[in-house]
Image 1 (tube, helix red, strand yellow):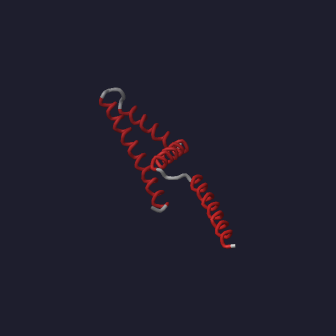
Image 2 (cartoon, one colour):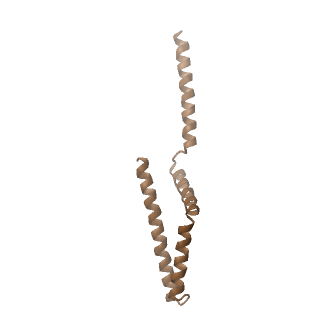
Image 3 (cartoon, helix red, strand yellow):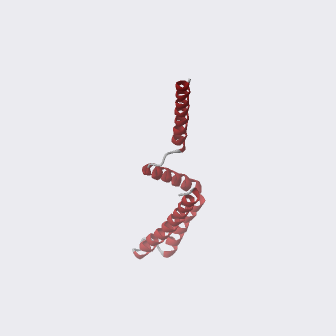
Length: 107
């Protein structure tokens, strides 16, 4: 799977999550209105305030999103870039050692 496809899927996941959160907030607000805990104006204000906070603190959400993605990728067994770089270095050293041994045996 290419990187653009991953990024597209992650973006859609974020959009879907935001939409789902907004929908659930509205459901909770409606329920509180039905139960008499809030009047309709209070529920609307409450939901709008929460959605505004979600929109004004994208850094917090982005950091949380990045942590979640990192955890998911780790659970899937996807190697981190530092691990891949370390393995490449080890492969390079082993290839040099094999070449050195081959050169010694042909002398």
